[in-house]
Amino acid sequence: MPPLRTALLQSSGHPGETAHNLKVLDAAAGRAAAAGAGLLIAPELFLTGYAIGDGVRRLAEPADGPGGRAVARIAATHGLAVLYGYPERAGEAADGGGAVFNSARLVGPDGAQLANYRKTHLFGDFERAWFTPGDTPVVQAELGGVRLGIMICYDVEFPENVRAHALAGTDLLLVPTAQMHPFQFVAESLVPVRAFESQLYIAYVNRTGPEGDFDFIGLSCLAGPDGTVKARAGHGEELAFGEVDPELLAASRTANPYLGDRRPELYTP
Image (tube, rainbow, N blue to C red; front, top):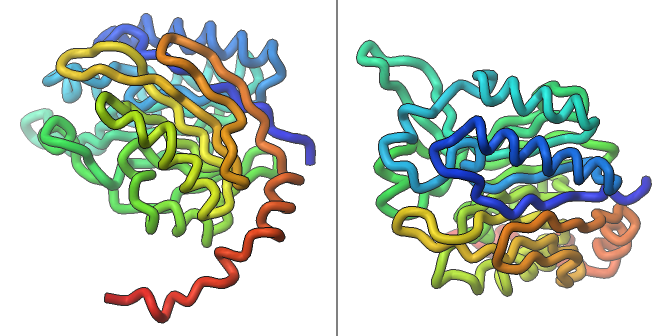
């Protein structure tokens, strides 16, 4: 199989302005497709912005809501798959409420939904105040012969979580994120180690710049199963590219025995 050229959209768009963020995504999809990418990944909660307070509930929508349909049109227009973060409303309570999840949705190059994931590990008081945690740790889809898995931000910091994907056969783990100061070591060091220890690719795609009480660090990256970083963004707005190579993945898994040498019977409490 040929490598899957992957575009990492490091951007925060305009928080609270879904229409503007869709324009940013559309422009990025056009540039990514022109550069030969088959997959574009946007950050955590890209559709609406992250630090939007009660706007989370106001702007939340179902997976197939207006924003989702707009992203589907973008993907189909440019002929590439798109993963984006958004606040997902699931069901309605009598008072117009209902659960809201911090979600990431993958749309195929034909505009059809391939997967929808709800963040399982919520970070900090802000997320716990506005979101309900998901309960499905491994969500996968196929794209061009590559098995994709999805996580969001804090999820990747749990080694058990990434290992579950490795054991389920994930080749490329998509991680839209909102990583902030002073945790840049996660992007710089932890993500490449996770890719090596679980023998998969990780696309870690961050927001950038100040937003409310947060200052996002950028440093998006594509880390390979050999522990090296195949693509790295800086601290500002950027569209970075990297190759997910099935041949390198197969060779690395043959050379590295971590998964085969596990002794899970020893790892119980």
